[in-house]
Length: 235
Image 1: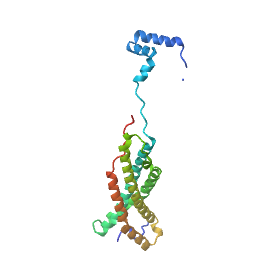
Image 2 (image 1 turned 120 degrees about the vertical axis):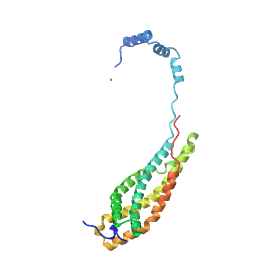
Image 3 (image 1 turned 60 degrees about the vertical axis):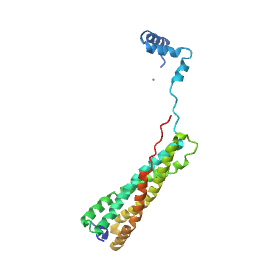
Image 4 (image 1 turned 180 degrees about the vertical axis):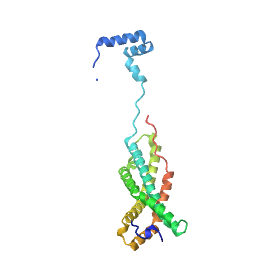
């Protein structure tokens, strides 16, 4: 193999009563329909009639269902971060594959290695931060009780399916992330590693990469086909 991975590179009051009475008188004389409605509310039974025609208070979504949805939302974000790491690591090793097959020049390989390596640390920092948020809520969908209103059954089922797909994708994403970060750290310390040893590490990483990358690609494909986690409106 040839290229960068072969050797080190240097270099508010209360109003008076008469004011209130005056306002009522003006409404009765001038306000028409508004005064009629106001006076009606003061008649015996007016309050009950108003209450009877008011809209009912919506029932809140069960807390366990909301927790499930929030868990899936956190997972969706984590998967997006994992995919960024996957994409950069894939491009990084593919440059070597393509170079070996004569599909790209050494200069082009350098260009790809520089571009992807420059994002390596930010890839993993973003992934780790969102992974921690997700893992704190990961099991929420499995804790939704059977006693929740029937209207949520379908939505919860969809959320649970997506949660499962997220879990599988994240498991694969962590392995890809580990491989990517291991290489980023090695390249950062390249000048302190003997040239021959560094080259062997790179050859081993390139040979190992397809297994984790393929597992993530398959899991991510199934994740994209998983149903969305959407809840019905509260009534």
